[in-house]
Amino acid sequence: MLLKNDSHPFVFILLGIPGLEEVQYWISIPFCCMYILAFFGNIIILLIIRSEKSLHQPMFLFLSMLAVTDLVLSSSTLPKMLGIFWFNLREIGFDACLTQMFIIHSFTAMESGYFLAMAFDRFVAIWNPLRHSAILSTKTVLIVGICVVLRGVVLFLPHPFIVKSLIFCQTNIIPHTYCEFMAVIKLTCGDSTMTKSYSLTVASLIGAFDLLWTITSYALILYTVLHLPTKQAGLKALSTCTSHILVILVFYTTATFTFVTHRFGHNIQPQIHISIANIYLLVPPMLNPVIYGMRTKKIRQRIVLVFYSFGD
Image (cartoon, rainbow, N blue to C red; front, side, top):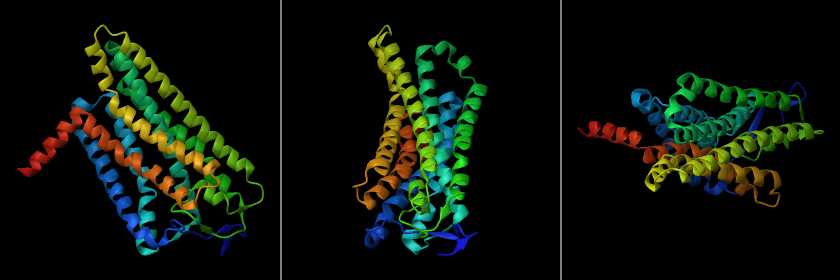
């Protein structure tokens, strides 16, 4: 293994999905389809929100931020993954690996933060609709968006520097499709307890904080809906939340499953670990535009108009 400064490898070798080498080409087909849907779906969402002034509301502004996050998150891993599967391009530079690791962690934290912001937006819209625009003005939405970005960047910026300070004295082969934090840490020598503890603590605190307040927001929404004067008004209010609830369930289900299996599922086969990790980074970015596009009337109507105009 070539070393740089007697401690870091020049490059890492990504193996892809160990144990499934013979079928990786076929696995790449659904992965590629998911990436295409994620990429173009989120682009379409961004273009529609930007061009349609009636969508310049807090919920859709947060949705556009989520779309950008999904684009970056999926694009940071999928092109390299397909390069491994299709062209055997397994090498990734040491600094590129650390950059990819930082992007995955920080943008996942941003995605979680935007889900919380959208949950709070739905709560305000149902709890006090007359003051919704005053409480969540465009300026407030932008401040919240910037805070979510800063939180993800600041808390995970130490990650690559901490990893870079470690000594890599083992193989430079990573049995994974991307630079997953735990897979990289396993290649180091010496005590990496502090590094793993920092990563685990930050990820756990962000996830627990966002999930707790998201659940609280929906509990308050449910309480408010149950006290509305008519059942029809309650059902109408809840219908505005269904797409968001579906997206949150997909995100946190895959995130929790990935977290638990990587940290505690030592008896689970590596290919299952890696497959779940890939799904975690691909499925939410793919489903977010599909679910919001199908469940949000204004976006659905605009998409129909666009395809109708192409048909003419």
